[in-house]
Amino acid sequence: MTGAAPAGDASSTGGRLRRAAPTGLLGAMFLMATSAIGPGFITQTATFTGRLGAAFAFAIVVSILIDIAIQLNVWRIIGVSGLRAQELGQRVRPGLGVLLAACVVLGGVAFNIGNVGGAGLGLNTLLGIDVRLGAALSAVLAVSIFLVRRAGAAMDKVVVVLGLLMLGLTAYAAVVSDPPVGQALRETVAPSQIDLVVITTLVGGTVGGYITYAGAHRLVDAGISGRDQVPAITRGSITGILVTAAMRVVLFLAILGVVAGGTTLAADNPAGTAFEAAAGEIGRRFFGLVLWAAGLTSVIGVSYTCVSFIVSFGRRLEQRRNLMVAGFIALAAVLFLALGQTPTTMLILAGAINGLILPVGVGILLWVAWRRADLLDGYAYPRALLLVGVLAWLVTLWLAWSSISQLGTLVT
Image (cartoon, rainbow, N blue to C red; front, top):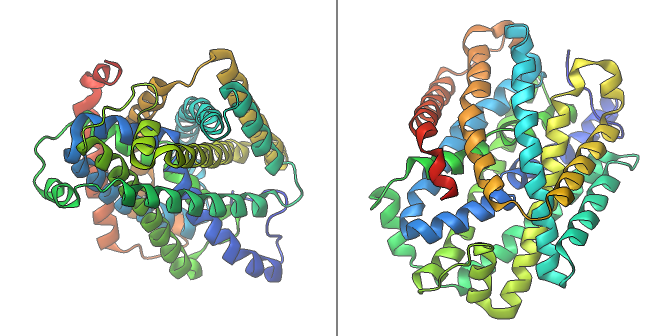
């Protein structure tokens, strides 16, 4: 069963589909990028930069390389097949897609609680309003996007605008913090220390769980799939990866400049401390805007993607997709308000757990590329690309295995 577009997206007629494709491709790129740059990633980057300093550059580079290898394959396999990841899993072995969907959705719920909290904290920092009120307002805004007639197009525009805003403001903070770029570059090739738990957590928080599939599922829902779309699929995945990598690097440099200058980051809001130390009051306000944008786009990304894992199991579910996305967002908001605080530890642990389940979904897709050409409409999958994907998959297996016994260090 191929993925159907949500209400308001491209219709089955060729003309409307072609007109929707450019917007859908851009939206898929930024949905992938902004999903990978949520409050969890911001929290992880600040926490681990404070702990490792310039040595964290090595973990950043490793995560980017793994991201490139995985996303190029995920986009190509899902895009060519026109099937979502869980649908491919079901074709490989009945029940496998259900297992994958369950893992992704459960991880997504944990992430989304933190995303709602991050958006609330962002509005608190930006405007001074109560965190719980900010979280509720952000959730209402996110829900409203999926209640309009052309929900898919509205989502695409929101993630593109907010993604560019985050990148611009963080780049400003990176410039004014004056980071030791030379030291960071040396640490990328000759790290003074390597922490496997940190790398696994970072990989899980930036390419694990639902994040792996956000852009590719949006691509299919926008009607951009099939062998003839390989050039567009490749272009979209590469551009999305570059945007994601740029944001990771500038955020790391912004925080590194402050840490290298001797500032101790606050445990409850390490990234906010860094922005304020770098640029004073305006830096604090910028951080609030960045965190709010990251939280809102991630709430949208995780909700949309998790629901895309559910709707293929029933026609009625597909028909109620937008309402289900709105309900997923509302659930996260209710759970956050019930918890009563921004779960910083939950954000970090969710990234670690996603890093542990990452090899499962990627392994399924790589098997399809290797052994199931029938699911790719006979497409001759590039062996070099498959090899790169398998190598990245082996690295994720090793990282997951190496860090299982060390997860306790994340909360100490």
